[in-house]
Image (cartoon, each protein chain N blue to C red):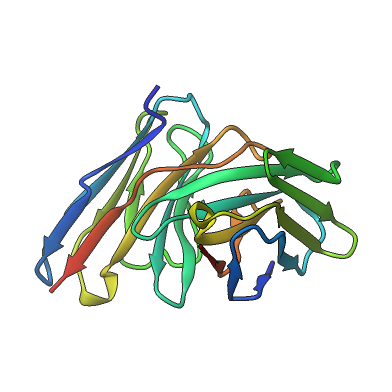
Length: 112
Length: 111
C-alpha cells in the first residue's frame, strides 16, 4: 500500500515549456486534490476532483489543467510554464467529504 | 469564504514543556478539522482528524479539541521533544468539498 505517490519529484522547466505532473493513489479514494505551496502563501488549492471523470476549479486554477480519466490517477498539466509557477506541488486524496486527507511527497518545480 | 488562522506563527520551547497550538476558523459549518505536521522539504503528515460531532481526539502525546460553535481548535502536545520540531497546520473541511488551510505554526523544541 503505497498511499499517494507523485511523479516526478523535481523538475526544471524553461518558460513556455509544458509538462504533466502525475498523482496516483491506491486507497480507492473518490476525492483528489492538487495544491501549490509557496513561502508566505501557505497551501492553495489549484483543482480538485470528486470522482472519475470530474474536475473542478480551486482557488488558483489559472495556467493549469487537470484530468481524472482513472479513479486512481489525477494529472496536473502546465501548458506554457511561467516563472510564477515555480512552487512545490502537492497531491492529496481522501475518502468522501468526511474522510482523512492523505498527501503525497510533493514535486518541486522550478521555471526559469 | 472560510478563513483559517493559526496563532502563534512561530513558537520556541525547551524540551519537556507542554504546549498548545491554536487554530480558529470563521465559518462553523464544517464537516471536520484535521491537524497536520510538515517537516522541512517534506509533505504533510496527518496527525489527527476530528469530525464535527466530536469534541476531541487523542493520539499518543497529542490531543486535539474542537469547539465548532466558537470556531476554535487546539492541539496540545505533552512533554515536547526535539523530534516534535516541525510546522503544524490545521485544515477545515466544509460543504465546498475542499480543505481550507491555516498558515501554520512553526514549532522549535530546544534540547
